[in-house]
Length: 270
Image (cartoon, rainbow, N blue to C red; front, side, top):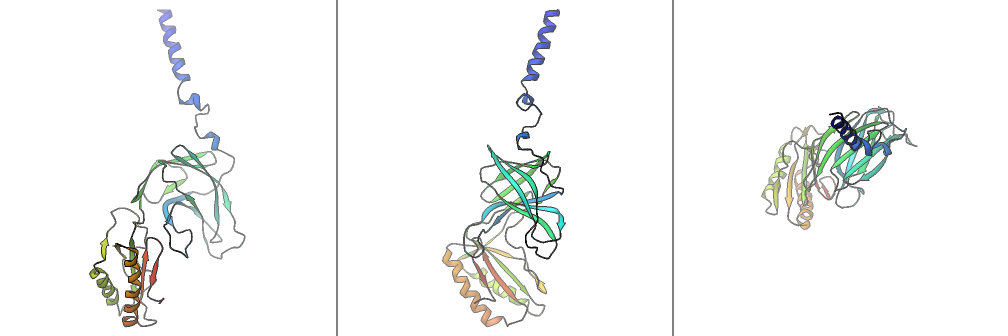
């Protein structure tokens, strides 16, 4: 009986030594990425697609946008980070808040954009010895982020839609006495056989502006899909003709057509 009990105790000891803690003596599989650096603010983040050169037409780049909850005295504070790829995990370590050389005189958070690889499924965020974990699913149409463990970070959106190819947003704002102009141009778009109205799914952040801004009447944006690049180019002339015939200067009306690849037509630019 004593020998049998000894065998059981030895088995338990051997099993204990072969658990994951044996590979990570301190119990932390990310200990090699931990340093003394840290920042003293919580962080919001979101998936985003941006144009790295705002002056030319090109496909958007997939990024993660990080925004501090702390507000600073300049609008252009930055976040210094270090990134690592470990298999299908993206590990981001926050190093410090970066003070700008030239202060843009407005209050604002510190912001940083990090490239989001297409082939990852887990996001690890490290601040000092604190580690947050998220699962992330990157598809052609949307990016899904789900929390596993959160201490100092917050995912602003569980679902973010990506820019669908060959789509554009119709964005229009008016004054209170010419609201019909928004509907009049919308009707021209709806009657165009080269265009199909596009609807995003529910419960997600839309990458295009969702309405106009700064007008007496800000209308909800509408989205369309076109067949060829030439279809969108022709809309420039359509908008130009509509503007010259219907929109008076300084009437408080603006119409924008913004495509997925950063092409734009504006009512106030011929």
